Image (cartoon, rainbow, N blue to C red; front, side, top):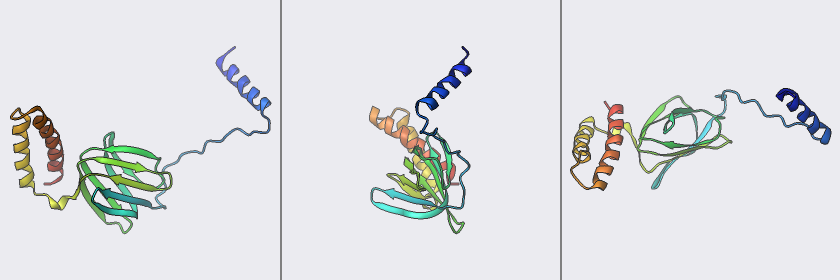
Length: 168
């Protein structure tokens, strides 16, 4: 008996066994409608920057790759890597923030939350200071210190290099 014929007979047997139960229909997933707003909550351990605030779109630096999130996005949990969070507000203005990492959670009811230990506006950084910190971290990462110091310097270097690419 072929697989298709076996599958059809199995489906017929299911219908025969439970004639009163209709087969479940899976809703078709379509591209997110931009009509609804995204309710953004962006929190730090010491501060709430957005609290269920309506926004149009949020672009995040997910560990799996950069992501744009609109309303009706599929629910997910994403780890954030160091990078730029871009928030498109309902009035069309854009806010750019730098995060060293964290987590983003999309809920089925258009609630999107970002939790991070550190988030700063790009305008708060100086390219000169970043270059000086990169040079200092490179010295430590190249072997001048304990294993822990070297490991910390490598993480710091990754964050600083990402930040340097965003601040010109």
